[in-house]
Image (tube, rainbow, N blue to C red; front, side, top):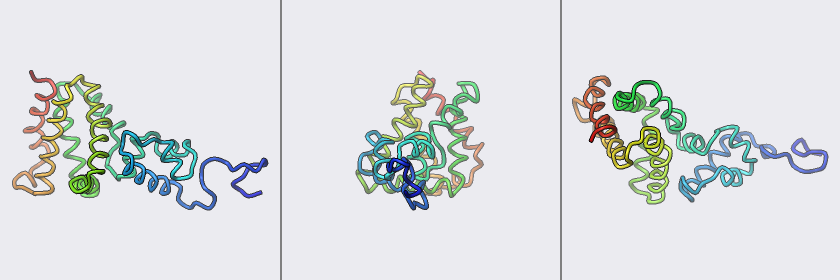
Length: 201
């Protein structure tokens, strides 16, 4: 009887025999499934089937589908954790400033920024990637903010577009003086505008 089998001869669920990197194996499967099916239609069970592991093992490593996507795409934060914390850590009337500060701080780190920009570059040339990214942004990021704050989706999408535009001008085009401006200086300018999208008439 091999180490991967029970006394009845049935294989234990989880790690494939001899697999040296189960986590990496799951991530490779996840990238394939997300690319083929998009974010919405991908499932933990489908990713586990592709990786030939038990779904419980996927949950063990990544907790949720959002967590798998974040790890597979090397994104710098998990929205399911970051967004509730961001909303809860201060008064509603300062959410715009907190959101601006959070995104500008994360993207100030080149290692955290590059996977995000890389994903966007891929989306510009790959229609399948566009759908996957759109679904993730809509459901995992914007959907959480809309639900938590009761903001109309269009307002939140425009706020996100403006904030992403600032990041692109700052780190891709490197427009001066924006590229080298202090984060708090940008927060002072952008934060109130984001707040207007959230709470304005």
